Length: 283
Image 1 (cartoon, rainbow, N blue to C red):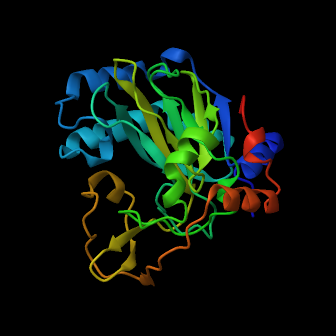
Image 2 (cartoon, rainbow, N blue to C red):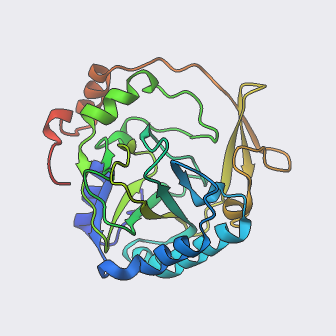
């Protein structure tokens, strides 16, 4: 597999853990993103949400353009042949449901070209009150697969609360840094208890030349339908709706065998990733 990162040490850490934290900007680099939120927020949604679900497509496009313009070039410069195709704002309001349970992000391209890569960039300061990101080290190595939208039932559904609360260490990321992770890494964050909005920029990357795809879960037929899509799909599509056109692929949905914490630990040992109990501390 072609290396994602140009720097060998960064690539080794990314392959083993599934994520790296990189310093790239001044802490104020995201201030324009915060200003855009302050001037355009209509209070449409409470709790946790991503700008891609907003009904105002012009607001979605504005976040996409500004976030890519602000952050994408430095990150792409660290990688081998990757490009940003989506920029979005991740919002955790101080009210409503803001816990992000353990999950993997959806598949957005033909991953035979290379893994999906996501950058999560704090726009406001993140601390224990607002909710640090948490990640299950190495989970991209033993829980592969195509991830649909809406999501199908996962093999860790029964332990997702315990995973987040007890088994996924915090990854501290400051303003001016980015958490860059494989889209298959299980991640999440606890609720925002800070009393203020927690804002982060979200960038998705794919290998240059990889076909963009969207996998939609058809709950009526219990199938995952794969669609070839254009790059503008990700900022214009109404999430949860079936894409237009005919699918190029139909995958049956199979009820997964549920894994417990002990099962996940065994899988990690086989993947040569340190045990969960040893993952505490700095990433």
